[in-house]
Image (tube, rainbow, N blue to C red; front, side, top):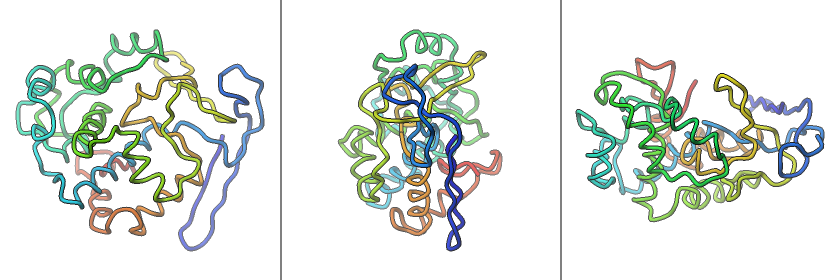
Length: 264
């Protein structure tokens, strides 16, 4: 375990306990975990994606109220997503889209687990979520769905002309000096790192996995201190404007305290 506690303007504590993985594959000899040991951040990636969308809005390239049809090809909308009411970017950001979670598609889940090192296109992730049918009309209710952030990654790529990895690196990771943060190119994390496990009825080792499986919603690798620096930058206006930060912090009434990419 690695942990960091930061009290703004007062103090920061970082610590580690137990073992990390020594090398680049599971099964290597264990080494002691350190406060700076890297790990797969999971859905904290959604905060990076949401910040990226807000950067594009600040530049006048998109609006959170835009219909996603402005940025997605018509056949994807007509053949796969099939929303019954206008679907906007903010519906994706705060999980009010009604599009079901790709991780809940058991057929797709088993297909992914059969070979975690293969490439998973965004189209497949979106299909695995949306093919399950509409849960509710956009804006009608709230339900957490990784599929929303697969679609947001596709919108970022369409608007910026960059793949999601390059956009996040160019616009967030490098400007903020998050030197231990990356979206990996390969299946394995280089150097010492924490293991990654997921309970899907049984514990699955996801330490080695192609980052495309998580593209847009769980693909970032980082450290506790880098993530603290990232959140401090958001809060203090070093990355996005105070107005955008307030949008991120606005909780949807029907959620379990969820804003835009942020869960409290």
